Image 1 (cartoon, rainbow, N blue to C red):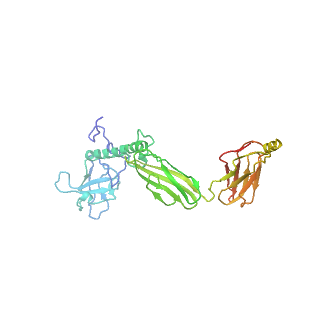
Image 2: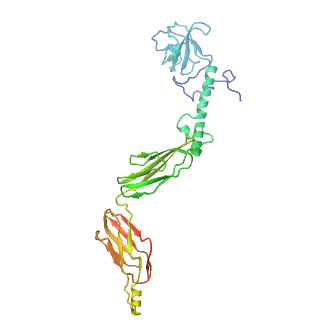
Image 3: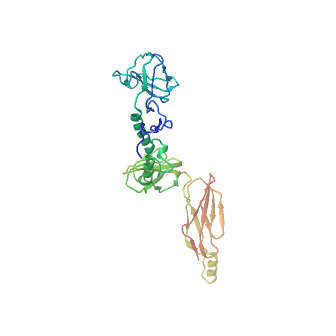
Length: 349
């Protein structure tokens, strides 16, 4: 399809400048029309705020006019920018526009379009089309339809999809008591060249796999920014990722011995002439924190509640042979509960 020209049959004002959809300003571009001309109806002085002419119908609603001499005269005219017009008056004037000389003009002076419409509107159309195709606003960068969106949006989408890294990391500990030292392992793929860690407590690091110690209680959000050699950037944020609290110590207890004789077996052996005593197991709690109660579960249906927080131990004798899985439930002053099972079952013969 051939390029539109203002000399084409059927051309109407604004076909090249997509006017009035694209509204220009004094700081950017303006519409121009062909064959727009008239004469001053009143004389124009240096301080005049209005230009009164015989007819403004051939001129756009805002733009630049050429004032003074006929186009064939060798003398220099004055260019005037106007912001609005009526049927016979131009107003909102900027006199001596584009470096031209401001003058006083007598009645009947020539008033015409300052530029040729074809010469002005064709490059203006090119600029508007380039802006539309490339995208010039933030919303253009994230088009709803990537395939048909502006070029900026397409490139941004492709960069995000193929060039931007997807940071991924883990911490050796997610909770614990202060001071809690965490080693952060960075599993981000790609040719990463820069890292920026934000540990959530006001400290940062640019190491690949940093070690950081949290000294105060609280929940900490950890963020990792990554830049790859292609210029792509990516960010991953894990909210309230690290929990540092005095009560975060894992409960721990042990049992001595790890195997023994039940009451039933001891009685049977004694009756057979081999005096035997059942094994008494000692359970020792070594959990730190402000504990107010302990619930011992021995795994054979028997339980014991210790309400004195200073008593860390208890004993138990198993009646029947078998393997038992004892556990301990601790209650802290904050009413939080923590339960732990023995790592290996107790074997009773």
